[in-house]
Image 1 (tube, rainbow, N blue to C red):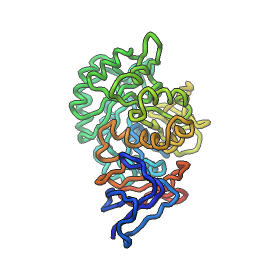
Image 2 (image 1 turned 30 degrees about the vertical axis):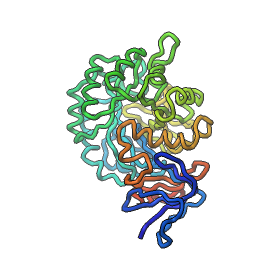
Image 3 (image 1 turned 90 degrees about the vertical axis):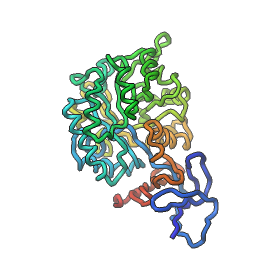
Length: 388
C-alpha cells in the first residue's frame, strides 16, 4: 500500500510548502502532492506539525557520556542512537588531536564498524587536527601538534577504508598548500581551524582548495580593520562555508548574525562541536585527555576555556530563530542542506527530494522536535523510548 505523510508544512529541497502529502516509497522520498492522489493510501497524520529534512551534524565529538576518541564500537553506536533525539539523522564522528597511532586506531574502528550503527547514519570521519598552531589551541593537546603530513593522511585513509570526509588544519603550518591539494584530490574536504593565520594565509589556503572555516570566531585570529585574519576570511572569501556554534556561549547572537549576513545563510553551517556531556547532567567529564566541567550550560577546561559544547542541533536551530537572526526555513537549511553540501554528501542526505533516503523530522511550529524518521520509519518519539 502507498504511504503518505500529511502535515501543515514541508521544507522541501527547493521550496517550503503549505499542507499536503509527501509520499514515502521503499524507504525513500517520493513526490509531494497538495491533494491525496489515492483515497486508499495509508496516511501518517501529522496535522499541526511541520516536516523537515533530518539534521546533519558535520562536527560532533560525542554524546551521552561517549566520545569518538574512546575508540569503542558500542560508544559509536550509542552516540548514533542518542542523536536521533536531537533531530540528527546523519553525522561525521569527529576526532581530536592525538598521537598518530591513536588516530590510526580510531579511524580503523569507525571505518570497520560504521555499518553496524542503527541510529543517525555515519557519513564519514572528520579529523579535527593534529595540524594546528598553539595560540588558538582551544581544547586540543598541543604536544601532538605538527605540520601537515600527506603520509599520515594516507595512513588514516587506509585504516578507515577511505572513509575520511573532512580534515581541519591551520593554514600557516609548513606544507599546508601541498597537503590541501593532495587531500582535495582524494575527495577530502579541507577545513581551516585553530589558527592564527593572516587573511592572506587563509586566502591562499582557500585558493589551494580549502572550503570550510571551523567554528567561526572560536579558535582563530579575529577581525581587525588592518588585518582581517581568519574571521575576516570566513566572512569575506567567496565560495566557502563557515561553521558556527549557536549555543549562546561560544558566540554572541549579534556576531552570529554578522557572520550570516556576510557569509549568507546558504553558506553558514550550524554545528554543535558537542562533547560526551551532551544529553547528560552537569558535572565532570573528559574531552580527550583533558578534564572538563559542565556548568551553567557550558563545558570548560580547568583554565576556564570553552571545551566543545553540550549543544543539541535542534536547539541551535531554535536559538537562531529565537534570537531573530534567521527564519525557520533558513535555520533548518543551515542545519541540514548546508552542512551536507559542505562535505559533498547532499546527494545522500540533508534534503527532502524524490529518491533520497526518507530521513526526516517532525517539528511543532515552535520548533520542538516530536519525531525522527530514518528510511521512512519512526525511530524516535519525544517523551518515549527510542523505537528500534
